Image 1 (cartoon, rainbow, N blue to C red):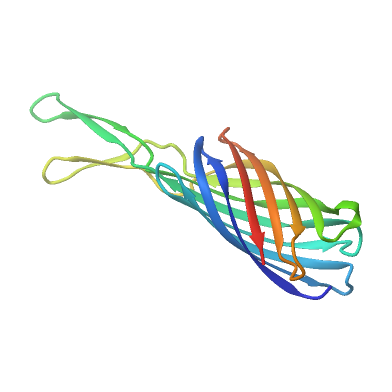
Image 2 (tube, rainbow, N blue to C red):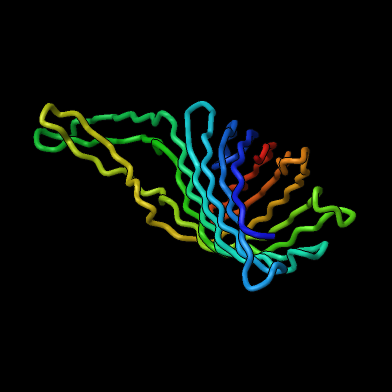
Amino acid sequence: MGEFGKLGVSAGITTFERKNYGKIGAEYTYQGDLNNNNNGYKLSANGDLLIGKNLGGSVGAYAGFEFGKLNCTQYNLGLMANYTKTGYQGKTTAEVTQVDSEHTQIKIDSELPHSQSLKTGLELGYSRNICCDDNRKLSFSLMGGAEFYSSAKMPDVKISEDGVAIAKRPQKLDAIGGFMGAKAEYSEVVNKKGQELFFTCKTLAGTKGALEGELGVGFRF
């Protein structure tokens, strides 16, 4: 089957940290054969812009092997990674109370300025040529692994020279948990050039308890 690459564009809707976003993105996939045409490898990368009350972004990568490429059903096993970051206008308020001549009590109410998550792990799945037609394919994969995210620590509070309390949340990926999920795709070749129309859906559940979902449609050429 040889080596080939495909560029794709997509649009859809996605949910991250209980917030809904519109999504537009691009991807690139490169596939090749191993010792024989029946087994091969696949490399892919993607980037998405998330559009909501405030903007966000997501990037991902995949590297894996494909087995039974000449059969009506193919199988895949690989490593995946995805990093998502969304932002919103954090709202910080400070209540200052004079305790005595030497001590001041400061109460801080602050929201996280953004949410972020790095997921990395294994992806295992299969693809089925519908009615053994190479031009119509249904794919399904399971994913699972580790999730790194920012913990909900209390903000660090510093008093500036003019007496203003400044609260800052830590922005490091300092907490770790697990995640699992699934994704499905239907694709169909629409012309003699091999260009594809595809539809995707994905759902993920992590340690933080918030479900993530995605629906999209795209075109590969």
